[in-house]
Each structure stands twice: as C-alpha cells, then as structure tokens.
Amino acid sequence: MIAATATGPESLPQLEDRVLYHLVELTGDHPLPLGEGVSEAALAERLAEELGIAPDFAQSDEFYGSSARGTVLAAVKALEDEGLLEAIKVMGPWTIRPARDGRRRVDQWRQQWRQAQDRAVQRRILEELERCWRADPGHYAYTSRLDVERLCADLGVPREDYLANAQRLLAQGKIAENKLDQASLADGYAHITEAGRRDLEVASGTPRLSPGAQEAWVEVARLRRRLQLAERNMSSLIADDELRRRCQDLLAAEGHYDRVIREACVILEDRVRTAISADKSVVGTALMEAAFGPRAGPLRLSGNDQEQRGAMELYRGVMAFFRNTAGHNVIETYSQGDAVRFVVLIDLLLGMVRAATSQAPDLQANAQIGS
Image 1 (cartoon, rainbow, N blue to C red):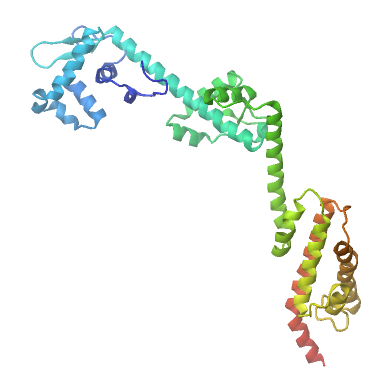
Image 2: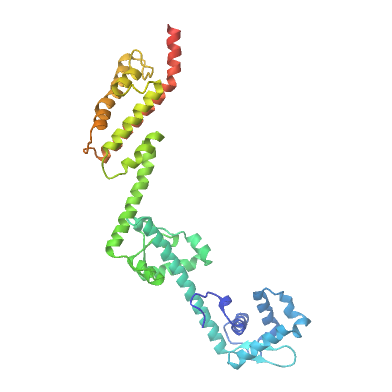
C-alpha cells in the first residue's frame, strides 16, 4: 500500500513497484497478444529517465554486463514470482509483459493517487474559501471568490480537476455558489458552508468554536472592517497631519470626547500663535482678535472688512464657546459624532490659517504699494 498523501509513482518505495508501474505504462492497460512484451532494455531506459541516468545507457553494451541489468532482472524475477508479470527468457534480452494481477495493482495505485490528489484539491478549495469567510464573515456569501488560476498552478492540476472537485464539494453541501447573478463556480465564485468548515476542522484536528465564540469572531471581523473604513475616511476627512495624529486615538475611544474638543482647540490656538509670532501670554479670544482683526490683523481671509470681521468672530467663537468650556470643565455630553464633526471644523480652520499665512507677504506688499 502507498501513503494516503502520495500522488504519483515517485512515492512508490520499492524498485520492484516502480518496475511494475513503468511496465504497465509502456504496455498499456489491455492484454498483449501472446509472445509480445517490452524488452528489458526499454524497461531499463524508462527507469533511467526517472532516476536521472543517461537513457542511452540501457541500450549500450556496457548495460548488458553491468550490475544495473542484474538489479532490473532481479526485480523482474521477484515480480514474476508474485504473479504480477511474465518474463520470456529466450536467447538474448528478456521480453517482459504485465500479468492481469499486475495491471490491477497499478490501477489500484492510480486510483489511490487520484483520490489523494482530489482530497488535496478539495482541502485547498475549502481552506481558501474559509479565509474568505474569516476576512468578511458578514458578506462572504457575496464577496468570496477563489483565484482558480493560482490554485491550479500551485497544485499542478488542470482547471478541469478543480471544477470536478468543486462540483463534488457543492453536491456534498460543503460549499455553495455565491448569491450573485452570473456568478460561476468555474470562475471561483463560491463560499464555504457550515458543513465545509466542520470538514476542515475534523481534517486539521482544530477544536470547533462554540456558537458564542463564532459570534465574537464575526463581531471582531465587522469591527475590524469598520476601523479600516474609519481610518481611510479619517485621512480623507482630516487633511492636517498633526490634528489627525493627535485626535485619532481619542476619537476611537469609548467615551470622554471632551478630550477631543480640548486637544483640537489647543492645536488651533498654537497654530495661530505661531503664524503671527505672538507671545505665549496671548491666548484664547484675544489671540484670535489679534490675528484676524479687520483693521490690523496679519491673517487676512478677505479683502472685505465685514467678511474679515466675520472670520475673526468665527475663530473667536471657537475659543470662547468650545475652548474655554472644555478647558475648564469635564463635559460628558459630547458624542463621538460630535467630536468627529468638531475635528473636521478645526481642520477647515487650520487650512484657512495656512492659506492666510501664505498670502500674508503678498497682502503686506500690496498695502505698502497702496500707501
């Protein structure tokens, strides 16, 4: 018998077994006419190809007097004694032919190899689909898909073998076709079922998750996806690197979102102070009046004094209402949504500070020319 995982003649442990296999390969699966067979040289040549020996060695005079020939003939004699082949030992090289029992044995090996290969393909299909399930347990019945080309290349099987084994798994209820129109099993559109996951657990010997643990796994995966989505959205919503870096972990917390308000206000205040090179003693509303004042403020957001006053009041209001309140009190009424929206507002205000800072030299030059 051969190992369950063997998939070809290279797994045959004995030389006699390989001799028998190659003999059947050379002669075919059907009985030969009386007296016909394969020469010992042809059989030795096939063995030489498998073992990486120069195939012309079996046709040379050196072969007929070598120990290699003696080894091949000894294997032939052992197989003949078992009734697995017949050797015609007339003058000259032997002629060898498989017996019916020999062909049956090779056929058994082929069936075992085929079954082992099918098991390997089916297990790989289940493993790949389980990974799809773990990656997206909430939507895997729609999103799960096999990379058929890569799977076939890795296993060294044709696409037809993949499809035949996928259809077997489908018939056994271990996989199911995706819930999409025109989703073809041939193109890898399938997802693992509960029966398929159980089959994998039995094969791998891993303990099965309890229903509660399975629900927890689904919830973890769902939260992971939400976090990944939130991280992508955070980058698109908040352009300022410092603001995003300092507030992101606070936004992801389970509460105490007044800390987000406090930190965002500190960043805005520090950025405005740096932009106008103000002393650290100038803070809050006084700082915003000095920076955005419609008459002498260096950070101009509009050439219209009324609009500039409106901008000043906007920055001043943030300091008066949000910064002062959160800076001196613990406020538990802010929700996560409130905190996110506030950070987005601060990001807008920081962007306007950057724009005003870059325009300040031009505005000052224009003012000097006008005077």
